[in-house]
Length: 301
Image 1 (tube, helix red, strand yellow):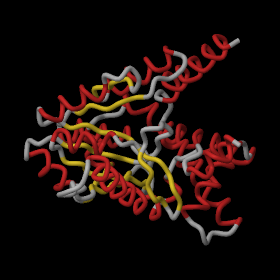
Image 2 (image 1 turned 90 degrees about the vertical axis):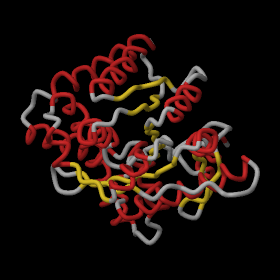
Image 3 (image 1 turned 180 degrees about the vertical axis):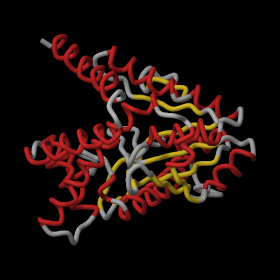
């Protein structure tokens, strides 16, 4: 049965990539909105979890406001998918005009130092579109990490898709990714990591919207080990078709303390930058899974 489900999942994604990118853009946008509204009205587990997460981000919101935010959140999430299916067929010139990044000089200046740069992002708006902006508008290749998906053919589709946008993609599993990322940074390269959720035992506990959550230690550890600059980036959607972003100042490495203490401090600073972007644009945070430790503990009980 699992293999049948795997083939079905892969087939549906394949249909998306093959079919959606052939649709006129207004038709793809309308389709994404209809799918989002249908999923939102069904109020399945993902929508309920999104609303629960948004309640932590916007604690003063009442039930009606949370429902409005969760509907906007599902529309934003489906906008991400519709855009992603269409990205390989888009004219790269559009990335320079339709993606507007504030303080992009900070990234350019960081890359010019030759120290290597780690861009860390939360699940805000469309990180693939931001990556396409980097490779096409800035002309800078970069390396990223992708979680292995089931079935393997689906993972291969994601890798091929991101490589078509100019990214080098490493598998998250297998243990070799960290060493490769470190080599890229020592050579003065750029790596980009989505880093607002880590369920492993090696994650770093941070204060996030007033409660404890766990985020990956990798960005801070790579910065310490290689001397690279760790720069948080937050994204948000404007009116179609524009996406906005902000390059945050590099997270400083503490001058003293153990590696563990430094990693904790740098990861907390990264989380704080993420929180500022999420609080400003909560509807564009695509977190449809459990994140906070209290929520994870509830599931295990």
